[in-house]
Image (cartoon, rainbow, N blue to C red; front, top):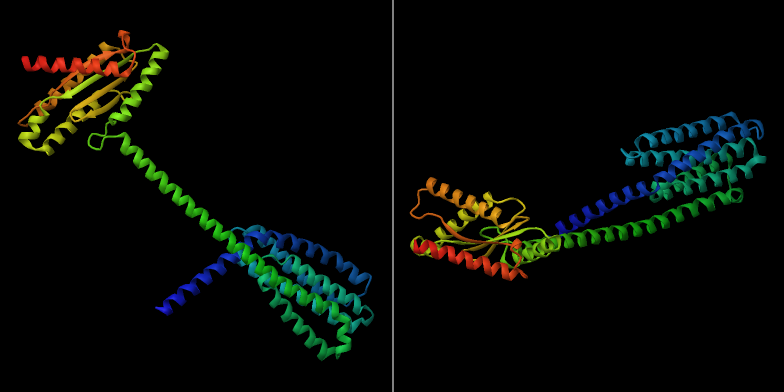
Length: 386
């Protein structure tokens, strides 16, 4: 169990380091490209000064050309592969910076041997290159200390072996050593600061994603609750409460526009007999078949509302009473057609009552519903009498 926990923690650390490297590359690779351009231009200009002013050995120029080639290749790769292979670029830039620092050390050694009078100048140039590498190290800041110290160690060994560098002579290069140590310390401290910023940023992003997920879940739950409150689960018609809200909006709108509004109150016949004789599941199928027939017979802009049990209210915006009656006749015709096609022991039928706003005597929605309900009941009674 403990080994699994340690393995998980190790995997998390590896993922964090990998993500941190990607973060550094994303944030600082552009800075590395700009620095590489500046260093390349500076080296190109210094070739002339080294050959014509300071009369440095020819090997210095060859070394500069080699460094320029490294930086040039990095710049070329950066513009081609910056988004495709950032890790490759970071590794190549590490090698390029290593070559640049190695050149600075080699430059100091060669100048101190061939032109002792320029030793101080060589130390200054070496220090400048070290500082420049720090400023433009970009995505390899976490490795810069290792790169600098490894080159510095080689530099001291070579200078001691070839030039007999003593502690006193080493003082001539104290600025180089100080800049190397400062660069390494600064690199490490800056990497730690960046890591803290990265971890904080990632934590904030994770919290933000979690909040977004919670918001989405709450919105989804709210939508489900609204749907449950708005639609009848059996028939998928509007619930009484939602339907009355819709009817009131249409009523006000049609009143304001002086347009038509038709309402039909429908009641399924013999539902109680079906429930008693065949069970409530058969009664539910009866209701579902009936409402499906209704929906197939009305327009997409019309509304179907389940008022309760076997009672339904149909709302027809911009329709007068005669048009609504024709729709009701179509519904009854379609019901009869289904009765002929279905071999059941009972047949679907319904009673209805139609009113419209054109009659001009309704001041409220409730008045329209009551009147349509009375007409529906009258229709039902006439069927029973017949």
